[in-house]
Image (cartoon, rainbow, N blue to C red):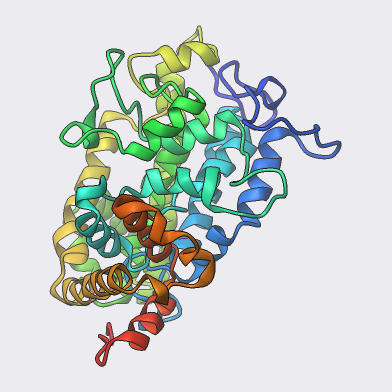
Length: 401
């Protein structure tokens, strides 16, 4: 099969005119299709704005050029739209899922999530995908007629399942949820709108998930080099990186360091996108599946080739110890976990210190409801605001540098 080049729509592309709809019925927009409307609602949400001041890897005041959750999200959007356009998918839905994929993240990146998961352990823990679902179905309060953003079924399904099915057909949890089960907020919402947790997500959701991987790989290399956590010579041991560096040097000679890094990052992104396009064409073959067949397939339709999957694993295998677990990053993230834990303990003992909109009725909510409300409040904080709040209640607040 020849993959579409931006003008031909694939048979397995989602169709906004055939959307399964929204929880709360609304008049059809005269100027926007259903998925474009979802994109716009996410962009205008408070949760999306807060991503500008939430950590990706480096906290906000380590430098203006490091990625934040927002800049990472915009980079994922660009890659997702590129994939969707080349493969013939619905670009608006792919963009929507890229825009929403990190909405549920806490301040201080994965450190904040680890801390909230521990303090909420007896109340079901914390999961950023489940939190994203809660944000768009409940916590955003912008509309007169409903809580949340009232997004389409396809957007909610892709938000929850972009990394694949959560359960098997018998309902047994899979992958990351195998040990502790699917988070309660996802199961609770699934009783309201069946998101078919056992099925594959849409092709657009699969593309958005790969776009996240591509952006992570390329731009974490960029940020790690900028931070001095490793050098180009260090990461050249990763085959795909070493191959590209040799191509650059052969074509241009010894460029200055900054241009070499940017050329490397650009070529990694391009190579991965082209690999997904070619691999998708191979998987769908001459008789491509329709939308229903994509969801019922035994595996993903959109994906890396085996060779590129190995390259992706090699990049992540390099970055994990040298960047994400680097002593400098771990020390800062350890302090960040302390900030989140301190805030949770303080508000648990002093719920009257919560802002009025968060504290209203909290004493009647019971232990579990009170803990979840406090967790929601902290999860929505930016890095800066969490530090400001900590300084209000504690004599010493970590500097996180």
